[in-house]
Image 1 (tube, one colour):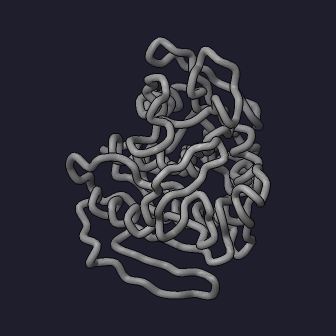
Image 2 (image 1 turned 30 degrees about the vertical axis):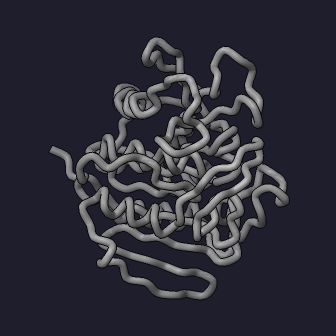
Length: 286
């Protein structure tokens, strides 16, 4: 029987050795649900564990967590958060457009193909979530391989990919912070920590773009207010704007100074909320 805890695994993909970390809890439901967590620019599997608490919740609830590792902007140079961070190739329109070519979508698919050979997973319960640049990568993967996922949950990251043709509606829970200085709710030009200015779309534009990708019309959106939250829903997709949150995982830890990313918020536990959302959905198989 495989041991519990973190296991680093390696994959050769596209002629490049990539790696991911698998967290296996002591008490594991079998066949096991799988949550794949993508960290943001400059993050690692270990920072993703720290900011979100997914491994702690997996220990409690009995599911597997996969933390894929992004590649450096320039793989042949040392990692540096400002000048050569690890980041996902999340689509057009971001500050990663000058990066070396990398097939991150194929890498994530390769992980999901690799897992069943080593773990007894439930293919009906494979979920994808991510933060910031990782959230944008969630969208990119979801529109490319929707058939592999039961639901997604992008946090503080925008929809950046062109819509070629609609996908079958895929359940989605989006979180953004009203106080986010790096992805302001109304969009516009922002100054990023690595010394560039970039145009960010509005949160409403990203939500509407996702709905269009699923073949839904923005006119179907319904809104409501809860204490400290503004919620928008259409079908099985939901956007939650947290009034006192900035560019930080909801209820999680901040890795960068508040002067850069703004304040965190414990109004809701984003990890638990996402897991509760995920558990509602299973992908038809066969």
